[in-house]
Length: 342
Ligand code: KG4
Ligand code: ZN
Image (cartoon, rainbow, N blue to C red; front, side, top):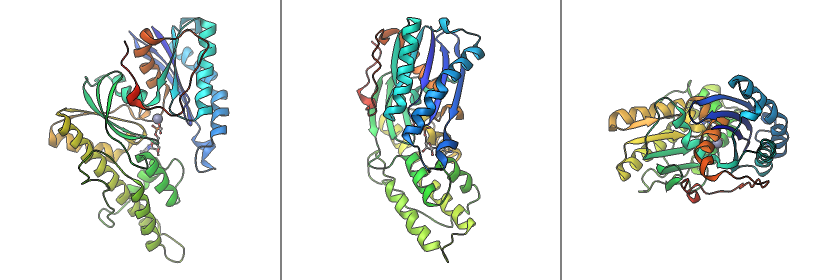
């Protein structure tokens, strides 16, 4: 079955073609980062309008790359939620219109299911069951994954998500948007050990996270280090490193605790923060020491993309494909409420 996947939940338009026997045939992405940068964050209305401009040209592009034509498409998957309502509606309505014209079924995909199944697109995919560390702009969760649609939350964030903490801290340090990549780039020039920040919830005895206090600790540090209204460049880099060290240590230790608690030996890292080099190094180091396996998607499939939606949709389309003109969206949607494909 040839499935077209459309991702439009936030600020990237992703389109991909996945074939259930031949694998991923093509994928294309348009990032709106430059457009939103001057506002310091995503402007929902601009995001929706840009998705409208991009989806069809990207669809033509992947069809051309895969050597396929529109009538070859046998099913369409789109991101149903969670995400920005207007942005989701663009993907959903284009999916419904194409499906109506092509007389094929559609399926709405949970964005986070897309993220956590993305490592299954790799040549050496993890087997079920595994622990997933899902760290994106909107989520920081540890999940026990026993199969497709079988997700139990082991830990969640009590306030800011890991990516959100990166973004807010970067903003506070006067770095660009999105903050995660900018902050981690500057941290490379940081002096190890000059500053130490708290490790929130490390000793909480559960698998939950809390990152908003870390941002406040950075704010206090910035105020203390600002002289004559200026924060020197080396100090800024040193604070970035201290912040990244704290987040990486908490995410790594809680992931190890989740593996220990469940007795599982495979960890899957998904979501935008999974692209962080220091997090990858920390987890790989822990994996070698504690004897577990760690799986990551390719860097380009850590952040939002169409390939993960085409893949997750393909896993569900045979069972759940709709042939109606409805195109529901769910801006808020709990991953645990998903069921396995029947
Ligand atoms: O998964 P994603 O693309 O979108 C959501 O579903 O939220 O994740 C975006 C988040 C942003 O907060 C961004 O700052 C963060 O992932 N991010 C990073 C890195 N690359 C992206 N955070 C830390 N280090 C990175 N290299
Ligand atoms: Zn995402």
